[in-house]
Image (cartoon, rainbow, N blue to C red):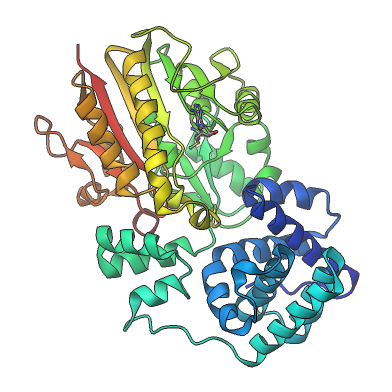
Length: 467
Ligand SMILES: C[S@@+](CC[C@H](N)C(=O)[O-])C[C@H]1O[C@@H](n2cnc3c(N)ncnc32)[C@H](O)[C@@H]1O
C-alpha cells in the first residue's frame, strides 16, 4: 500500500509526476528507466518519491484489473479515450481500489492533475467516472471457481499469457505465477568477482545499516529488504551491481575460461558483459542501439574492466569477427520479457502472441551468428528473460536442427547450485532437460520461475560446437 501522500501542493506534484511517467511509458519507455530520472529532478521529498513509484508501478502492474473495473462505467470504450483521460482514470482507479488513498483525496488530486496536464473537459470526464467507481467497486470473478477469469481480471494478466502459463504449469501453477508476477520485487545485488565476495558484501551492508540476506539461488547475490541501491557505496564503486539472482547465474553458466575471447551478441545495458569481463574473459560486446551501447561502456568503467570489455554498436546477427574466432558466445536475446513482470510490469501489455514469431526469428538469427563465430569445442549460451515455449526450448531445438555442428552441453555451474539449494531435488525443479550421454544431474537447459525460485523467469541453454 502506498504511504499516504502529503496534502497540498506536494500531493499535486506527486500525481503530476506519476502521470508524466505513465505518459512516457505509453510512448514506449520503460518505467524502471524513466522514473528514477524523473524523480531525481522532481524536488519531491523521499516519502513522496516512494509513493509516486508505487502509483506508477501499481497502475502499470494492475492495468488489467483497473480496466476491468473502469470498462462498464465509461460511456466511451477505453480504447477510444484520449490518452491523458485513460491515464487519469487508471491512476485514480488504482488509488481508489488498491493504494488505500481516501476516496475524496484520490478524486481531488487525480482530477486536479488531469486538469493541469490536459483540459477541464478531460478532468470532468475522469471525475464523473471515478465518482461512479468510488460508489460501485467491481466484482471480481471467483478465484477458485473461475481461475482463468480471475487471472485475466483481478490478476491483471493478458488472456494469451494466462493460456500459455496454464498449458505449461497447470491452473494452480499459473495462479502462483500470476501472484508472484504481481508482487513488488526485492532488490538483489550481485558481488563483482575480483572486487568483493557475498559475505564481505553482507558485512558491508550490515555496517551501513542496510538489512540484507544471502540469495537462496545465487552464491554471489544478496537480497535487500529495503533501501535505495543507487545510494550504496558498494554499488556506486562497482563492487556490487543490481542484478536478479537467476540473471547472475547466466555469465558463469557459459563456462568461459579466463582470457577467453567471448562474444556478447545482444549486450546492452551490459550486466552480463560486465560480469563476464569481471570473471576474467575478454569480451566483445555487440549492441544495436547506441544509447544502450553507452550503458555497456558505463558498466565497463564502473567495474574497472575497460581493458577487457570492448563495445561495438552493430547488429549481433552479423558480428565483427571471422568464423570460428571466438572461444565462446553469449546470446542473451531480446524477448517478450514475461519473466521479469515484477520489475517491468508493463511488459505484459507490450507484446502480443503474434510478435513471438518475430522475436523467435531474431533469437534464432543471433544463435546462427554465434554458431558461426565460435571455434570448434567452444560454447554458446542462450538465455532469455521469458518462459514462452516459442522463445525458449523451441528456439534451441530449431537451432540444433539447423546446426548439426552444435550439441546440447551440460550447465555445469548449476550443479554447484544444487549444493547451495541444499536439496538435490531442487535442480530437477528448475525444469532442465538432461543430455542422453550426461549424468542425470547435469541439465543442458533450464527454466527459472518467479513463483518457484524467487527470481526472474530466466531460461538458459548451453550448446557446444563439436570438434
Ligand atoms: C535482453 S537485452 C540484453 C541484456 C544484457 N545482456 C544485460 O545483461 O544487460 C537484449 C539487448 O539486445 C539488443 N538488440 C536487439 N536486437 C539486436 C541485434 N540485432 N543486435 C544486437 N543487439 C540487439 C537490445 O537493444 C537489448 O539491449
